Length: 191
Image (tube, rainbow, N blue to C red):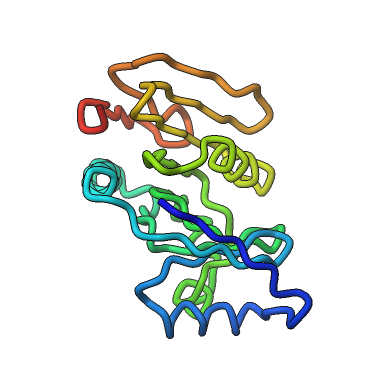
């Protein structure tokens, strides 16, 4: 995936509404915005990554339908984080009580909330350091649990609020811990 970062500050500072309208008027382009206000333009994923992302969303969706504890989101959902960044994790989840605190208008646009859980699946062309920085940004904005899955190396990085990162080598499954109760993710769909 090719990513471009544009600093628009010499020209303008984009408001939240302007960023929202830019995204709506260009639905075929994946945009994010970092905390500095820089616009990040990302190309779509390839077939293998897209398929695995879809399989992951299905797994989380099935778990969530059974537990009825929150809302699952795919990579097309952009969240307005407390630090001002607009980010779109590959898979994310928000507890129902936190989601219900948002107004309908906040839910319709880019929800101003950090998810409770995020997952990033490293694409072959992603820069590992950039994705690690993105997960660290999620964590510093209140995410409780984050997973970075690297298919190529078969490494999983687990990020937890207030704890050091844990790295697993070629695990068979991941547990949702207390954030995603009783979730067991079989990693055969990823490897």
